Length: 112
Length: 113
Image (cartoon, rainbow over all chains, first blue to last red; front, top):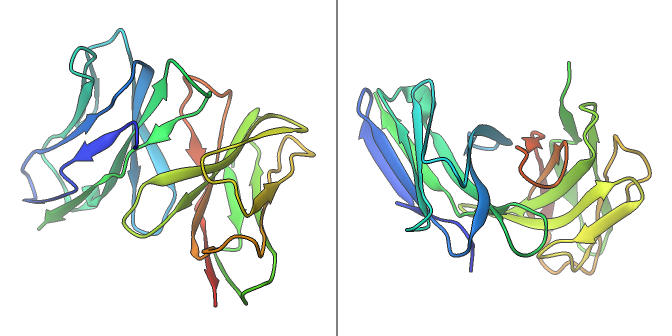
């Protein structure tokens, strides 16, 4: 199964509210990355958090990493209609081939 | 402008035909990747290349082939052996294989009928 699994699969909130998405993984990682994909487009890198980091911020984004629980969360504060997109986590496993493993994604809809 | 380009954006082919998808980058990245994305799904790795003239199979390489003759280019051929080729194909690049963010192209939507 996928190394990274996002939860929930879909999330719909009102503009201005905060959105939280979670990612769980199974094996030890070097880092975890979050990407955004607008419908029918390529992915855009949002943030990378290393295994020795617990929290990172970038603008309205806050990412946490709990390696003991093998989980990460992405918080988008004060959401905007333009945040409507799918969000994917990707893990860089310590063991195995040198490649990122993407989860299935969370589809976020921001209602005006 | 630096970036990664894919062409064409939409591609239509008849079943049984091979088709080649283009991917070019001018970011001077060593590593390049091809992913397949089906509706509502995540990305699955087809092939990746760490350096010119070298590439490795990903998780779903059957029915696909690649070449890496130049650092800037990593074309993907979808052969007639691929049983379900209709999908959205994404190319990406990164400075190296590990611990780097990947830069994605806009994608090619392939429809085979």
